Length: 219
Image 1 (cartoon, rainbow, N blue to C red):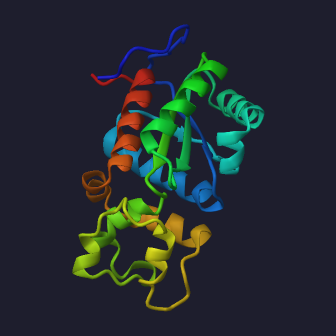
Image 2 (cartoon, rainbow, N blue to C red):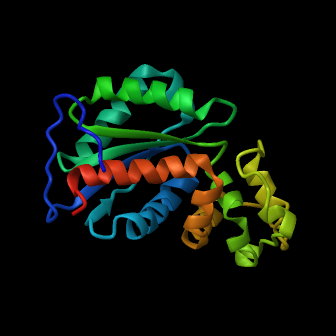
């Protein structure tokens, strides 16, 4: 069940209202990949809720983490896009930061900036591509990836360079290209497998359910 709304937050609970999700991401690949992934998560976890995934805004990680004015500006823009019947998702790569600590810090800052909106902050540990490693067995043969049995059992959140992990498993030696590969792999990956093997992916899914059902409660 969804938790209480933030103080002062007016939540519309109407199954006929389309829930708008406005995201902020750091990479060009995520701009195209995240809407695909979120639509799949919506069909999987909240199929009863009509949702609209807005085109994400791309903002450099440095601006979001270390430049408060830039963070505030982009957050307010995202909040205006989703309106009263939607919520904001900030998705970043954790890199070498602790996902829980940095995520909570950014969420608290965000709630102070837009107290009238619901905001979720998710840090992929260590990169978005780690979720592909978590679901690697389901990606064998797709986008020229060759996944071994050992690869399928790899600790998804351990590799520092998840993009490089994928690149060396490309049989065409063409390398990994986020703008083209990320959307295609997001459309193909086994969501249950990623959920079972990646804590940060579970965080994304739990936030999706909790925030979306604020506006579209389960029966």
